[in-house]
Image (cartoon, rainbow, N blue to C red):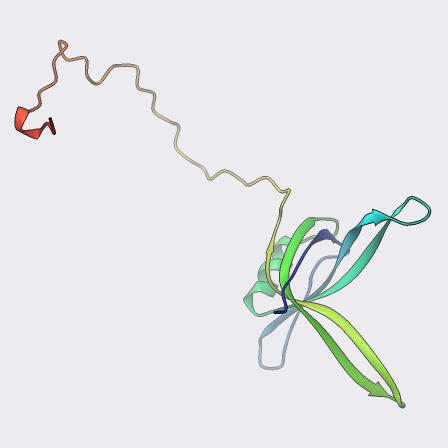
Length: 136
């Protein structure tokens, strides 16, 4: 199974392009801090290339900005090719989902809540219920 999940910071805005047939393709890089320190006592960072296909690339291009902390899920892809007899490799994550783990969710605009100051059962102390409706 080829599944990868990363959380880090965008090193730049997502670059959005379109194929000749009009399909959107996005590219970006996520900086992911390693969870251990090197011999100098510092954390190192890996810069991982992202490729985003389809509608998701347009959504990410509209929401992910340089410096934003975000997470992606996807699959690891390694492309290989030969150039002048030398084998070259390019590693990237093909993204199939993203999220902002630290971004506070905007609350939807709602009407002001109605406050109930009166007891709905305060009708001279009696509630009109037929005894046949009671389960006991």
